[in-house]
Length: 78
Image 1 (tube, rainbow, N blue to C red):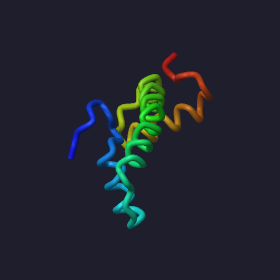
Image 2 (image 1 turned 60 degrees about the vertical axis):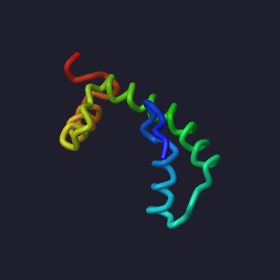
Image 3 (image 1 turned 30 degrees about the horizontal axis):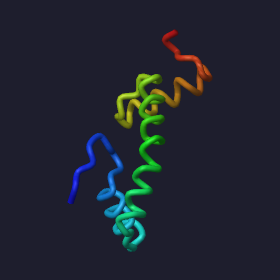
Image 4 (image 1 turned 45 degrees about the vertical axis):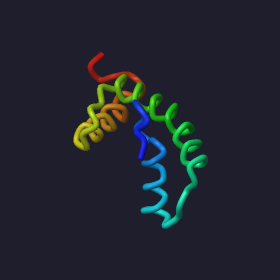
């Protein structure tokens, strides 16, 4: 097992995900390709969550959703 630095969805995680959720195996090249495909999406989501001051807690998710619902694309604290 190799560790891919700074990747949330590394190849090993992709293989484990497919195995557990879909009861299928994924070869190394497909797992690597999926990992590379997901990384920019993860980085974009991380930037967006930081812009909303979201701290990854479920209660904070509800706060953010209610704030966005009430204010549209503007932050309530602006």
